[in-house]
Length: 346
Image 1 (cartoon, rainbow, N blue to C red):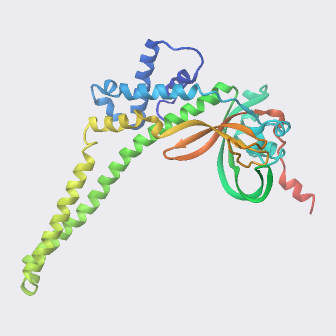
Image 2 (image 1 turned 90 degrees about the vertical axis):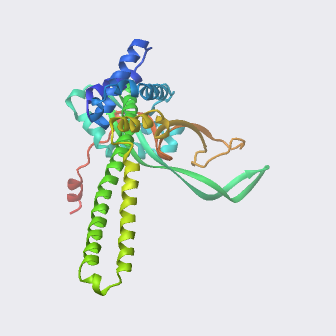
Image 3 (image 1 turned 60 degrees about the vertical axis):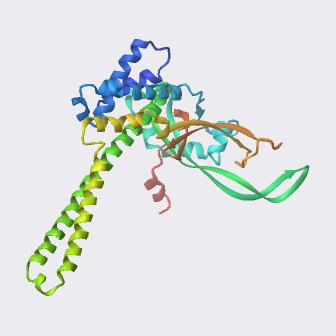
C-alpha cells in the first residue's frame, strides 16, 4: 500500500494511548488525507483545494477509528489449560486439545517465534479471526419447571480460525484492526472508481459494435441490397441502431460525469470516508451460550455465560468474529516430521 510508513504512523496515533491535541489532530488529518489520495487516486493531488475538500470526511474517519480503538476488548489466552475456565475459549474451540493444535497450524505464529529478533519473547499477541455459524438442533430444555425433549434450539459454532499479524505487544495487535479498516475504506473508494472505468471500457466496446453495425446498414441501404430489400425496413433498422447508440452515449455520459473531473474523484472519496461505518464496522454484541454452545435467551434460567464478541462487518454482512489473543510460546507444539512418522510404519 502506498506510503506504508505514513499509514502505520497515522494509525498508531489513532490507536495509541494517551490524549491528543487539536493541533496534532489537524496535522494528522492532513497526513491521512494525503495517504488516502495517494492510495485511491493520486491524480487528486492536482486539485488545488483537495485537502480542504476532503477535510470533513477524513475527520469523520478519524473520529470513527478512535471510537473503535476505545472499545474495551480483553485478550483471550490461547492455552490448553484455559479451555475449561475461560468461557470464550470454551466457545471458540470444541476441545482443549484443539487450542495447541490450532496454534501449531499457524505458519505466521511459527515464523514469529522462529525469528531471531523474537528469541526472548515468551508470548505473541495477534488477532484471532473466526466465522460464526448457527444451526437449529433438537435437544432437551426446561420449560415451566418441566423437562421437554426434542425442543428446537440454536447451536453456535466457530470455524475457520485464523491468527493474523502476530506481534510482540498488544498495542501492535490493536493497530492491525486500524490498518485493515483504513485499507477497506480505500478499497471501497478505489472499487467505485474502477467500476466507472469498467463502464467506460464496456461503453467503448458496445459503441464500437453499434457504430460498425450502423455503417453496415448504411452500406446496405446505399448498395445493391437497397435494390432488392425494402428500403423502409432498412431505414427502420438504421433508426433503431442509431437510437441504441445514442442511448449508450447518454448512459455513459451520466455514469462518467462524476469522475471526468478531479472534483468527481474527490466526490467518490468523500462519499466513502464520510460514512465509514457503512462500509466496515467493528461492533460489540452479547451472546449467551451454555457449555454446549447452545444459545440461551435473556430470560432463561439455564446456566450460561454471557460472551462479549467483536464482530467485523463488511458492508451488510458479518465477515468475522475477532478477538485479541495472547499466544504463549510454551503452547506451540513441536513441528511434526510427518515423513519420519510415516517411515516408522513402513
